[in-house]
Length: 93
Image 1 (cartoon, rainbow, N blue to C red):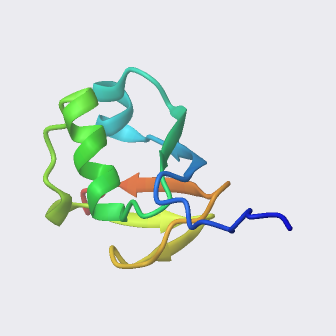
Image 2: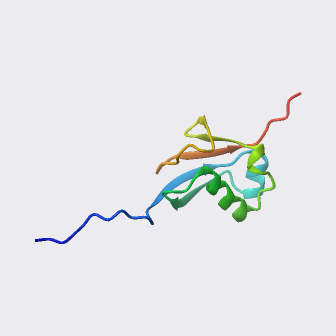
Image 3: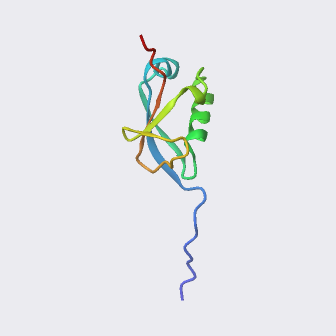
C-alpha cells in the first residue's frame, strides 16, 4: 500500500507579470517584469517587496492597483498568471 499523502505545500509559488507606468517605470527602469511570488502573497506584500527591490518613492496609499486590466482592491487575491499594475495618480488640469 502506498504511503503517499497529498501534502499542502506552503512554499508553492506562482508567476505573475507586473507592469509599470509613469514614475514607477522610471524608478524600476523597466515597463514590465515577471515575478515569482509565494501563493499566499497579498497585493500589499507584493508592493512592499517591489518597493524594496526598486526603491519606489510612492507609498501604497497614493496608488491604485489593477489585476488583469480591472481595478482591484488591495485585499483582492493574486492568482498564478495574473498581470498586476500599480497605477500612480494622474494630475488633473
